[in-house]
Length: 216
Image (tube, rainbow, N blue to C red; front, side, top):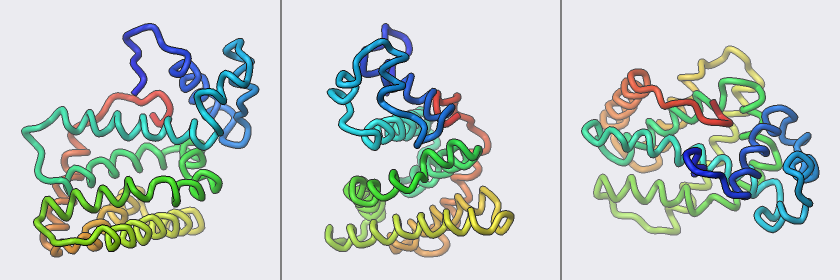
């Protein structure tokens, strides 16, 4: 996570400038050369820290999710379970990611998503493992990876439907379908799913994280 209380490192400066440029020029219009020119460094200095634009955008997204997790975890007295925690996380994340065409395009850019399907499978598998452990489900890691692939594929299809059918679902319905699908894949019963989603929305509505430097 970027620390704004101390003198930023070069890596943090690169991320900060890149975040501003992604918002200004979009995913396709942001280049390592533009970032290097603004910082007064050579492009190879950026590639030393980030091999490609995907890795740069990935770290910005990881920073955003870490930022939200830290905020949620600052309320330990309201913690319920791992499924609830991930419901709150995704409600926060999608409400902000989907709030503007630019942030939407950054997260769902086709090149980013193509890399994401391969690069983040272990992370998503870990989410399913945490939830199933928390609810004392027996599981197999290979089975969890298949569930993670199913979940990531469903997210892509849901986004396509949201884009192609404006007004067909609200933003909160979009969030709901995402977290409901996780509950189903983790074999939680309907009452448990609905209770946790209802409580997650209530928490998200009553606790507002501070603004993030790229995703608002």
